[in-house]
Amino acid sequence: MTAPALKEWSAAVGALLDGRQTVLLRKGGIHEKRFSVDPARGAPFLLFPTVAHSHAERLRPEHRDLLKHAADSTEDAVVLRAGATVIDAIEVTRPEHIDAIADLHIWTAESVRADRLDFRPKHRLTVLVVQARPLVEPRRLPRRPEYAGCNSWVQLVVPERRYGAPVYSADELAGVARRVRDSVG
Image (tube, rainbow, N blue to C red; front, side, top):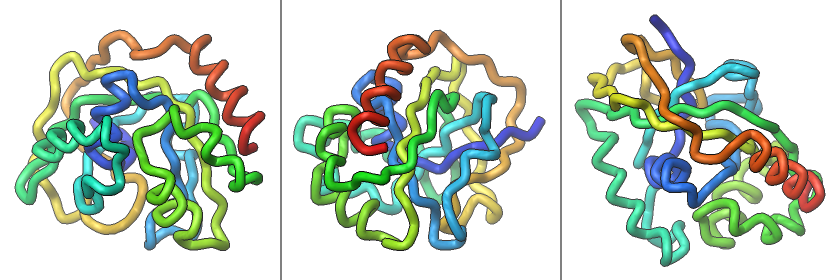
C-alpha cells in the first residue's frame, strides 16, 4: 500500500502528538514551485519526520525537549509515529500578524520570519490546521533514495496502518482555523 507523507521536522511531529502544536507553517521545498495540499486533501496522510533543519535555536526554550524526536530520522531509517488530516489550509495574507498565532506552534518568532516568511518571499506561507493522530504501532522504514530532496511530499510503501484517537477534536480545530483566518488570512 502506498500513502502520501508530508515531510515535517521531527520536533513538530512530536509537538503535534503532545498537543503543543495544532498548525503547520508551509511554503514548499526548494524543488517545488509552491506548496500544495492536494496529495492529502480530505484524507489522512503520514507525517515523515526530518531533522536536517532542527536546531535548538529555532525552538522556543520551553519546547527544546522535543529535539529528542530527532532519533526518529537517521541516515538508515525513519520511524513513523503519526498521521494527520488537513482541517483547513489558510494562505497568510497578513504576515504582519503572524505573532498572533505563536501559541499554536513551537517555533521562535525569528525562525518563523527567517525560515518561513522571508524564505522564498514571492511564495505565500500556508498555515495548515491539522488533526494529528498517533499510529497505534509506529512503523520503522528503511530510508530510500526517493525520500531525499527538499520537497514536501513523498509516497511511502507502508504496511497496514491504524491510527489512534485524534489529539484534538474537529470542533476544537475548527475554532483554531477561525482564529488563524481572523489573524493572518
